Image (cartoon, rainbow, N blue to C red; front, side, top):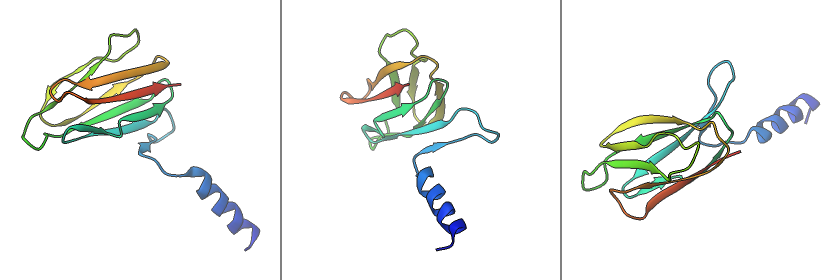
Length: 115
């Protein structure tokens, strides 16, 4: 391979792929979390302080909505009330681990780790 091709391959490999997006012009990233029936997907995300988690709420198989309720902890973002559908962002500005539940569906939970 020519040196310029090797460099491009190395850059592409280093970039990798995940479910996050960077806004135009740089800045903080956004990570997607979906409600799939009675589970969050992914149910664990790791982000930097100032990043956003975009919760994509869709009805469960029986038509029920979902809520996102964070454990009472300093720095946790506002809870999301029971919603049938929508895309709801939450910005995390404080470092730590933030556990959340959907109380409509017991056992449906996830974690956001902010570094």
